[in-house]
Length: 146
Image 1 (tube, rainbow, N blue to C red):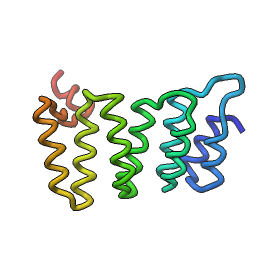
Image 2: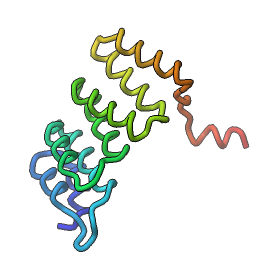
Image 3: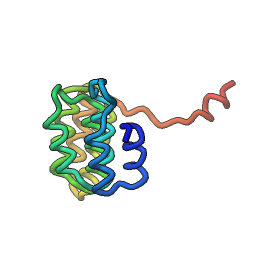
């Protein structure tokens, strides 16, 4: 099965069989890149297979980037896995330290876990580093200004 069909199938059916196909699939003769691994980690994470997603990351033939660690962090928030979220956040703060979104995501995860003190520490760290999470906007905002 082509890799893009396996990924689509896994999005539709995030079960064990679909995730196997997505993690093993790859275009013939094309080297797997960050985007492939990020998608596999995302699919495994959405399916609740967080430890398996971490094993995929650990087995990557190159250093995982922000998309890969970001997919894992998102899955950790979805499934309330604080320990793994801290690992993903630590890596994100190394590979993409200027992105306030990672700090904000970790603070939300701490808040959701009832660890308000840790959430406050992360927010204070953001302030100390002069970082602000930009407010969300939509494409409609652009049309309203025109």
